[in-house]
Length: 133
Image 1 (cartoon, helix red, strand yellow):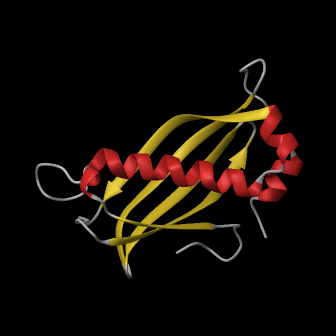
Image 2 (cartoon, rainbow, N blue to C red):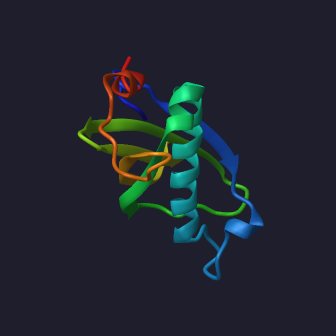
C-alpha cells in the first residue's frame, strides 16, 4: 500500500487470457506493461493540461521484484506513487497485489523532458507539489 504522505493512485483489473504465458501464470513482461500503464494513468490524473502539454516523462531504469504469481481471472490491484524527485529525475514505486498478497513491486526512474525539444527539464516546484499531500 502507498505511504500516507504521498499522492497515490490505485488501478484495478482482472487477469485475462492474453496476460498468461506457457507456464499458466501472468508473464513477467505483463507486469512491466502494468507498471507503465499505471504510471501514465496516475500522471494523467495528477497533472493539469498545461503541464502535460509542455512535458513528457521518459523511462531511464526499471527494477522489478517478482514475489508471487498471478493467474487467470485473479483480481489485481496496482498502487503507485512518487518516492522522490530531484533535478530532472523522479522515482516511481508500483506495488501489484492480489487481495492482500504483494505479487510484484517495482521502482522506475523517469526523466522529465521538455515535450518540444525532447531535452531534460528540471522538475519544477509546481510539479513536485503534485506528488505530496
